[in-house]
Structure formats: structure tokens, C-alpha cells
Length: 199
Ligand SMILES: Cc1cc2nc3c(=O)[nH]c(=O)nc-3n(C[C@H](O)[C@H](O)[C@H](O)COP(=O)(O)O)c2cc1C
Image 1 (cartoon, helix red, strand yellow):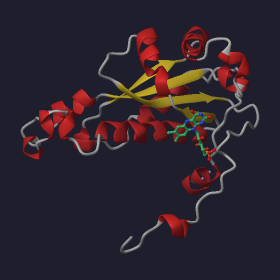
Image 2 (cartoon, rainbow, N blue to C red; image 1 turned 90 degrees about the horizontal axis):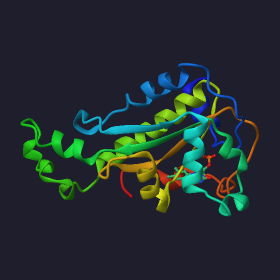
Image 3 (tube, helix red, strand yellow; image 1 turned 180 degrees about the horizontal axis):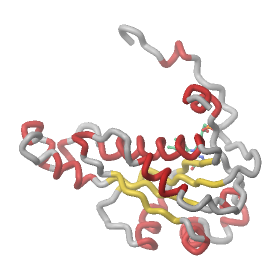
Image 4 (cartoon, rainbow, N blue to C red; image 1 turned 60 degrees about the horizontal axis):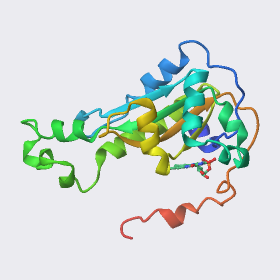
């Protein structure tokens, strides 16, 4: 599949089969994901990889305990054999921008100096690259948010306090269609989102 076909046909998957990924494949997908561009080449994106039944079960026990689980609309999501929580390290950016070649930017003084938190931008790039790499080899993915459960996940898996999550990528074999509540919204016309020359 060409990149053009991939990006135009990709959809989120919320119904997975339980089969594990072929050996070595996840490592390869993560290796692709970490190659995205990053501000100052800071490379402050890190991945919490949950790829054993026990680790995945722990994630869901932490974020979706009973009785909420019984009411959950996408039971097939809980079968995904792999969950990757994508984190951004703001310290890596402040450290990098305090180095000699970047000090003049003033961004090395602390995170409050950054008008755009590029650690989140770069980690989001990595999350998308991970999704596209997985789709490219025929797998299904769902990107979903942690919302208010971020502290509980950090505590359950020993994530350092300063790491900021951008979300979770579930990866596995597609079992069926399970469109989300927002999936039926029409794509906005290209002319509405492109402002050529001026807004
Ligand atoms: C930042 C972000 C957060 C999302 N959070 C969720 C989520 O919590 N649950 C979910 O089912 N889908 C989630 N999605 C998936 C979106 O609902 C989905 O991408 C959108 O409806 C468009 O559908 P498509 O990706 O299949 O084209 C999220 C997507 C993004 C980019």
C-alpha cells in the first residue's frame, strides 16, 4: 500500500483479536516511531510498553475497573495484545536548550519559557508514527486518551513524576468494526481548513 492509500484509508480499530504480534515486530514498530523529528533533536519521547497478558490486564484493572468495565462500549478493545503509553520528557527539552548552541533561545531556563510545549508535539508525532507503522504491516490500532487516569497509571507502572503522557496506542489484529461515537462525523472540506495566503 502506498503512503497515500494508507493515510486515506486508515481508521481506528476498537475490536481486536487476542493473538500476540509476531516475535520482534513490536520492537521494529517502536524503532520506527522513535525516528520522528524532535525540537533540537532532543528525542524526549519514551514508551511504556505493555505487551504481556498480565501487564495489559493491569492497565485495564487500573483504568477500567468493575463496574465501569461492564458498561464499556468496546469490549474488543480490551483484547488488544499490546498497549503502548507514549510519554514526553519536558526535562530533556529544557536540558537540550540550555546547551551552548541553544542557550540564546532562552528555552533552557524552564518549561514555562516554552510558548509551545514541543515535548508534547514530538511525542504526538511518535504516537502517530507508531500507528502508521503498525497499519502499514496490516495491524489495527487505536489511539486513546488517559484523561484523569494518568496519575493512577504512573503509580501502577512506576512512571517518573515529570513524564507527561500524550495517550495510549493499542495495537493488535483487527477483529471487526466498532466505530467510535465520533467516527460518523463527516470530514471537513479541504477548502475549510486550508487558508492560502491569508486567513
Ligand atoms: C487525541 C485523541 C484522543 C482520542 N481519544 C479517544 C478515546 O479516548 N476513545 C476512543 O475510542 N477514541 C479516541 N480517539 C480516536 C478518535 O475518536 C478518532 O480518531 C476520530 O473519531 C476519527 O476516526 P478515525 O481515526 O477512525 O478516522 C482519539 C483520537 C485522538 C487523536
